[in-house]
Image (cartoon, rainbow, N blue to C red; front, side, top):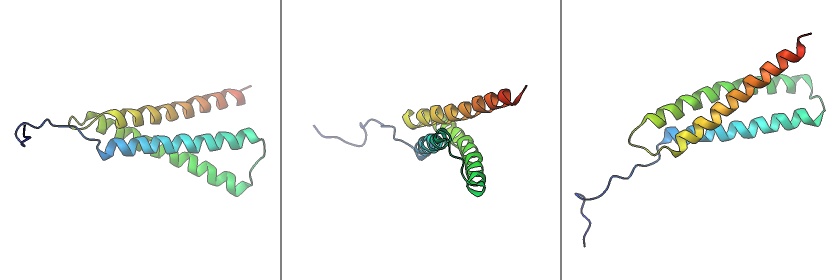
Amino acid sequence: MTITTENQAVIPIHKLQGIASSIIGVTSIIFNLLLVGMVKSGTEPPTPMSTALSVLSNGMLCVNLIGIALGFFGAKDSSSRKLYPLFGLTLNVAILMSFLVLALVGLSMKAP
């Protein structure tokens, strides 16, 4: 039994779009867990560090939007596997939704 190039099955591979989307999602989860840990510790960071964390948090939101776009395009690609794009989409959308929920909770707490 010999294998020739004529009868080989086409095996879909993982493309870089899906892998990048899932890496962005995992990195964002880790970063957000660190931020939550700093908030739960109860100590207030110095003003420059607080400003830097705010800028990094907003930057991660923008990167999550990029991760959502990469995951969408990776999932739409018919010649690749769908594991990493769907995993990245799930993580990035979950982070984005958690930020929106936290923002709404924060706004409702400030209202009288």
